[in-house]
Each structure stands twice: as C-alpha cells, then as structure tokens.
Amino acid sequence: MKFIINRDQILAPLQQIVSVIEKRQTMLILSNVLLQIADNQLVITGSDTEIQIVCKLNLETEAESGDITVPARKFLDICRLLPTGAEIKFELHDDKVKLSSGRSRFSLSTLPAEHYPEFNESEFDYQFLLNAGKLKKGLDKTIFCMANQDVRYYLNGLMLQISNTRLKLVASDGHRLSIFEDDIGQSTGYEARIILPRKAVQELSRLLDDADAELNIQFSSNHIKIYYKDVVFSSKLIDAKFPDFGKVFNQAFMTPILIQKQLLRDALTRVAILTNEKFKGVTLDIANDLVKLSTHNPEHDEAEEELVIDFQGQPLSISFNSQYMLDAVTNLDSELAVITLASNASTCFIEEPEQPLFKFIVMPMRI
Image (cartoon, rainbow, N blue to C red):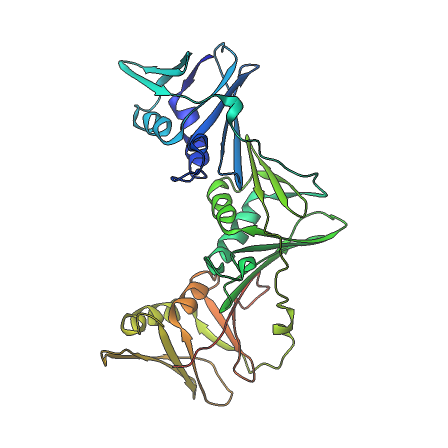
C-alpha cells in the first residue's frame, strides 16, 4: 500500500472523522482510522460503533492498493502540524506505516484492516433530498435544548419528523422545548418520525459546513445514512417514542408581548450575573407597559432592570431560568421577540413576529 496526498486535501476530512472517535475505547482498533486504497481513491473511515463517517478522496498520482488502520489522533496531529501545501508520502512496510514529507519522517504502528468492526445497517425504508443549509439551521436552532444523560433516554437526542413536504426538528430536556419547521422542497409522500442521538446531532451539525450542498438522507427505524459531498455519515437511532408535545398548543393564551430582542437579551445577561448559580432564576413582573426583571441569590445580592414594552393585559409576575430565556432570545433572527404566556401561566412561547420557522417553549419556575 502506497500513496501520495497533499496535506490540505486530507486534513479537513481527517478532522471530521477523528471527532467521532472516542478518546477512550473498549476496543483498541476503534482508536484507529481505516485507510483503504482502490482505483486511485483513498477511503477513510472512523467509527465508535454508534456513528460512522466515511470520506472518499481522489488521488492525483498513481497509488498502490491496500488497506490498513493507523492511530487516528497521531495521524491527524502529524498532518495538522506539517506546513500548508506539504506533500505526504504514505508507505506500508510490514506492520509499520512510514510517513514522509520534506525532511520529516514518521513511523506509526498499525492494526490489520480485517479486524476493523463492520458498521451493520438495516435496509432503508425512507429517502429524501434536502438542502444542507436548511438542516444545519434547524439543528442549530434546536441542538441546545437536548437533554444530557437524562434517564428518559429519548430526550438525549433530537426528533426528526417528515410530513410529506414538511420537515420538523424538535428537542427538549423536559424543562424547555425548541421546534424548527420548514419546507423540504419536494413531496416525499410519507410520514415518519425518528430520534437522532445527541452525539450524532452534534457531529452532523459540525460536518455541514456548505449551506449550498444537497443532502441525500436515507433512514429506517434504527439507522440513518446521509450522503454529503464526498462524505457518508451513518448513525444508529434511539429506539423510543418522542413525547407528544402537540397539546401544549391547545390551550388559552394571554395577549402576546412584543419586545426588542437586543434590549431583552442585554437586560437578561446583566441581571443573570446575580442569579442563584444553581437555579439561575429571574422574575419578570409585567404591568403598565413595563417589564421588570429581577433576581437575588443566597448571598443577598440583588439585581433589577426595567424595559418598556407594548402590553395591554392584566399585570402578572412569573419566573424563568435566565439561561433558558437567553438561549431562546439569542436564537431569534428578527429584531423583535414575541413572548406569549399561557392563560394559566404554565408555559411561555418565544418566537419571531412573522412566519416563524423556530419556536421556543420554556416552563416557568418557582423562586
């Protein structure tokens, strides 16, 4: 096995692949990347058995076919620290890989390619095409609401729902929920729901760096595969049912409150300095075209700030986690934030004024 490749051609794909590989592995070979040469093409594979990324690179010079696995992070660090534009010569001698570039020489230990675990996938029942920028935006608008190591394991991920021509992404940690909904751009002719695991969502968001690219998405009840340029991203799915959040819309609401997004964001950021570090609670007292944000903590520090709003309803006082509010407001693209409270003060909606693609729901808290 022998090939020559430019450092700049291999670096970005290698970084994407290595990010999937866990630093501590139960199987030593999973710390390696699988390199395969065939038909003058280099195929690089990385996996943690739950997620797999495969990248195909065309080689400009004649290569000698073969396959081997090399330590992922060491290989990446060598490529990363070589000069921009450097040519890397890769040669396999027995159980060692020799890397040379300019006056640099490296020798890496290897493990046989036949020992690299196969990523078993089922037959894919569904398929659709989607703009990468659309999915990337949807992931970014919902990713921060996913739970982390919650016993309700279906919350440790993101729900993807297809309803013929509509795409919906939903994430929740039980205290807040974000919904992104957009048009797919074609008729799929089916309805389906799947839950992507937390790590898969994070890696996918990191991978999608070209908003104009087209994705070919295939999935079944337990696997998803996404073709993106020269990369194939695969992941197992969470086998569970996502909670029905639809009933949160079927209730009476108070008059919506319109407020300048930047003013609210700045005020929340300042007031949050003195919140209780554990609960981060901030109280909103709304009355007479004013909203007063206030907080205190166990050290008896206090903060309050007033903002002018357009509000005609009954006065009310309600408390929220300041970080949840900040996450929602920061993700709005419009200059105005629309805050709508349920009549029984059990739920708060935060969204944009016109045709919002993104809705954020946060539950109030007791202080």
